[in-house]
Length: 150
Image 1: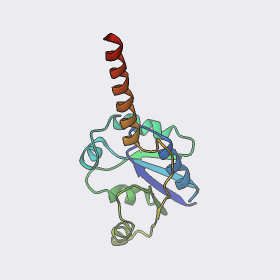
Image 2: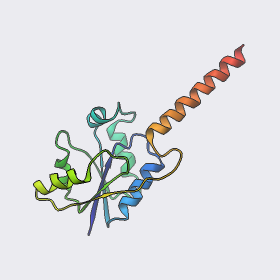
Image 3: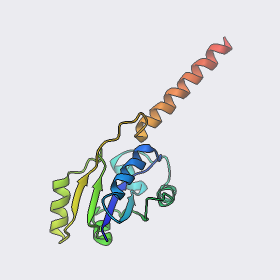
């Protein structure tokens, strides 16, 4: 059995997430997904739109995911030590350095392969893109309403 670990925020599930998890799943026989906690998301990215329990439930429901767990607070490698994956799959845009992850795992006596997955080229493959598209759509709708009222 080859356990693959993927991780992310998964705030608004989209095709980029699905592609990332599908590619990660191809690397092994079991896919375990670590969903970032709300506090981690706040520290590293933004205020989460969807609470961690909902994000965890959504990711858990995906057919390609064998198990989903919440990340740990503080030491990000605590969950790696707990899950003991054979492979850590990184998304193309995750701001983590493969060499650093390898070094941290080695310090803890973990032999884990780190794989950077390729980018998917689609229009709405990122949460920020979706948010901007919704904001843009809303602004146009407001403008059209104001114009009709005149």
